[in-house]
Length: 297
Image: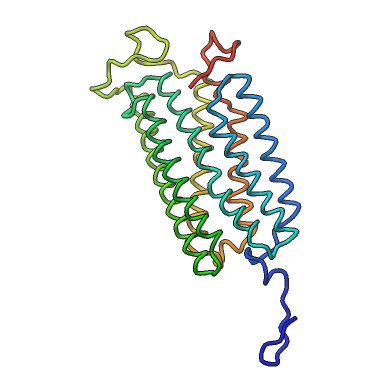
């Protein structure tokens, strides 16, 4: 309680909280357990299928989510501290970026299986171009914004950092949309058997020199549906974070815990577990190499 012009003012923990609420301790523990479990499973799967690109992509996403939710859990005990708030906002914003990179790698493998002649981007350059543009640029922008917000001593300074982070989220959303269009064009061309004229001669992976169209197997179909589902979740989450950051640290969206838990936390949980279940090591492995865990990307 403090005095202001002779009037007693009572401060609650919610008034001192940068969230404008006290994060749920139970929810924090639940998400930490969920992300830790998925990340550990991915560690086992990458060792089983020798897919080491999962470490800097999906596992990195899980690690950042664990840090982010650890920050929220910390806040549930000491809500007045700004450090755990900045820790969670920075980590949870950056975490899905490497997960999206995994989608690009998986899509590149699908292109190699079904036919590079149907894709405007080659299976070699598709993941590289999308990852370098999305991961590097987006992470740099979000990291710079997070650093400015974390070191800010005023709400105005923190909001300036939030606007920079917003730029990174918007850029990420643009790349996701571009990815969707590239994948959609590839799917339409494959279904219509309409290869690009300049690429019609390109063979499929591990096929004969004359084989330019791969077989759309049940496993490939499951991987495609999983990729569509996880990408949709990432789009929903990116739209939510765009609206959230656009309102600033004191906006109504960032002050709603349920929205964050559902539209950020739950979306990434579903996306990362989708790849656990519909794993590329199982669904995209070559028939004669699945038993020995040959890398598929």
